Length: 128
Image (cartoon, rainbow, N blue to C red; front, side, top):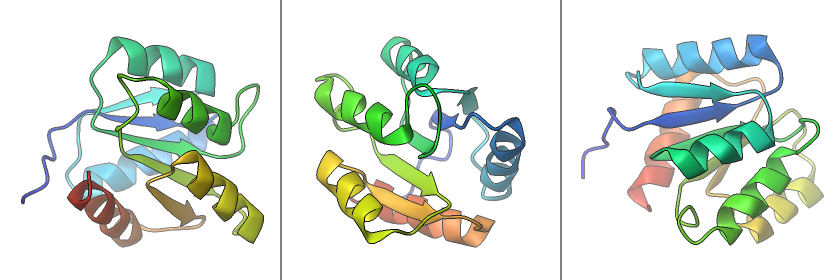
């Protein structure tokens, strides 16, 4: 099944430079409908008022972490099935386990490139 590259993608990171990098990587793999949020609570508000096919969120944010955002998304009946990719600088086993238990769709460790992002997105959307 072909992937809908016109879907709305929400990227969440409290670091503006990282948002720009992720947006550029998404553009390279032809995802152009990208919205940004700079923290988990802003992301949650956008998710609840919009229609997003994918969330790509940083783990390490304040005041709401990416893990807390993921838990909120999975607890929301309308958002529960939204594919969710977590980005982190640390590949600690306990983080991976916590994210998996919370229902993360996939996981990317920084630094990463467009090809890695494309592979993870395709894998996630194939199972959505």
